[in-house]
Image (tube, rainbow, N blue to C red; front, side):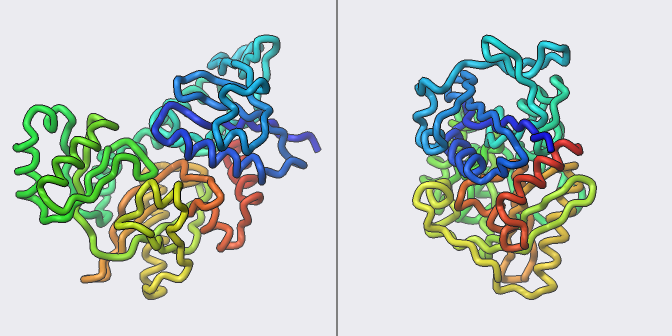
Length: 351
């Protein structure tokens, strides 16, 4: 059987560069080499594209950037004979691209547009779906229209924060009680997210989030369980079981996700089977509503006071590190990591 040539694209210019490199290492270590040949292509923090043959450990620790085994390449949007990846001496056209890019210019539709122009199949959602899901404000607007339960939220802009912080604070305090969450609208992995317990912390959180995006969300704090569901598929998606995040810090921060690795995941959250089914069905409903493809991780709260399932956000390119929740959820559901990677590549080629 002829092998499928898969370009594994990692790195990127977003604040989630290191997370992406860790995801790439895990994927490259586990992918079924009997079925797939791989082209590891990394994007440096300053936007240079490098085809690398260095060790996967060097991809995770960043040594690949200045490694002699890394050579500059160009990914062309052309559909002609001279198309695909130009190495300086030859063209290589992959059969599929598996982007393990996170955040800006990775899962926001930018790369997906390049792949579509080049007519190269890729893992994950379309340009439109990726862009909408990346922007939490647009996601919330669509889910609100579909009457999917969410926490109360407010959208403010960087310009408003910089020009009249006092007015923004008054608006927040009129609408919410402390604590509140503040987050950039267009980042993932909890980058730029803060929990504010008072006015001083709110001002700091707003300024911090505005460093990452021109759009900032303020959200109601939900006292409850943090739940996650993985979704896999195209037109007939399936949902994993429901996992519960057990954060090691005040909330499920970037550090607890990727640095200290101390947050846990329970595969048996203390909710009824009926509520678990509601969470899974809502995850599938959100996936379909936003026209997602391939994979997504859908996050929820289970509010204690009224046992209500509340949609939080969706991630169309969830982390693929060894401690990431998406692979863990499907491993528990009977789809081991290597098989999951294979299924996603096949779904990408199908789409």
